[in-house]
Image (cartoon, rainbow, N blue to C red):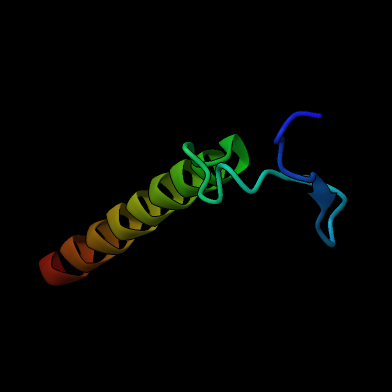
Length: 58
């Protein structure tokens, strides 16, 4: 018999590896959402800046 740790599944069905309790990488879906939110935030800020600069001239 080998001394391999028992592998279980969590609530989502993913395998739990007791030898690596912390993930090494951030999942790709989170990176995509962060990039979308950052881009959308910059677009909104740019639009508001444009509105205020046009409003200041009139």
